[in-house]
Amino acid sequence: MCRMKNLDELTDQIKRCTSCDLHKTHTNAVPGEGPKNADIMLIGEAPGYYEDQEGRPFVGNAGEVLTNLLEKAGLKREKVFIGNVLKCRPPKNRDPTEEEIKACSPYLKNQIRKIRPKLIVSLGRFATQLLLDQQVKISQEHGELKNSDYGGWSCKLFVSYHPAAALYGGNARKKLEKDFEKLGNLAKNLDNYKTSQQMTF
Image (cartoon, rainbow, N blue to C red):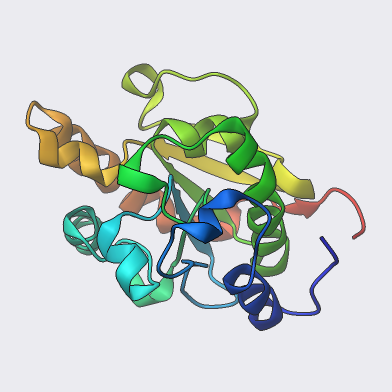
């Protein structure tokens, strides 16, 4: 993939992408949305049905959960950048494959390098494992603040459940609310977080 000059060009590239077979089955690619200089990025797994229909991230039921969580954290949705590991919906919302993640990861790396966030929030196992480059157990590591050096950009990474977890019962909703309460407090100290470009692209 060639280097994009700006985020708009990268978005156009994502919409035209044919790097994996998901372009054959999707309705719309979902590049992500938010300010080009957002201090906070939220990264989920992949678009679902409604996201695929609209070409926007987190607009279905999990999106409603996420919007409510952000509000409780004192964060405005329009002030953060929201995206996914995969930019296209896997059929029947199945898990992403390693090949699909590999094909799509350069886009996320480019987005992170261009936006240069002070804090990334990983929503769920797939995003967390990709951004940390290691296996994780969300049930044990959610709510933790870690260091991420993904794609050449070094910043803090806050780990949480995917908002869809709140739709399946259990106590995931309470855990998410506690995580986002902590996120709201962390967001008040963004200027204290160190960030750095690790290499030249």
